Image 1 (cartoon, rainbow, N blue to C red):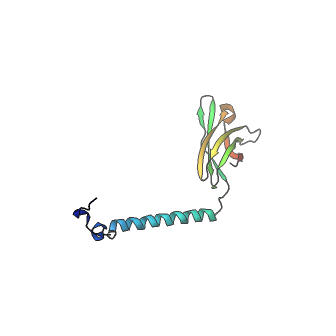
Image 2 (cartoon, rainbow, N blue to C red; image 1 turned 60 degrees about the horizontal axis):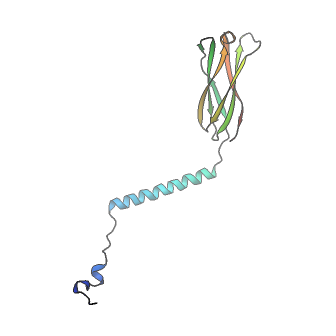
Image 3 (spheres, rainbow, N blue to C red; image 1 turned 120 degrees about the horizontal axis):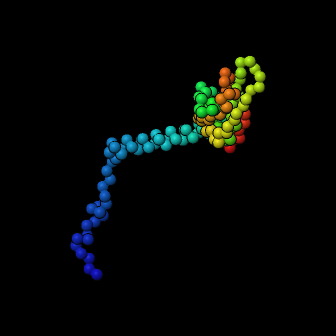
Length: 143
């Protein structure tokens, strides 16, 4: 097979000429590197610090009459960094004169770290008259 003259260009003509990166390519290369370093620093910081266990702050809202019942809204705040599962919340009505204190409870399935959930305790209207509500977390599981 005979060689054609147009195939005889030489090695210099076939090699592409490298061009230096422009400003846009350099900018995005630096940004990508900075993001990777920030991610690695964040992972290292998280690995070096222990999570705080679940800790709770409970706040009771104003009671609302609904039919023949009184609904007492309760907000539970998890101030720790670990999650809690199956929180048992007990709400107690405290009367000014003392006496028997009626209780109601509810369960919150899951409460992530540094988050809040709201629940409602329901009391008969006759028991809630003139009483002040207090609430506490009485148990939970660590997932």
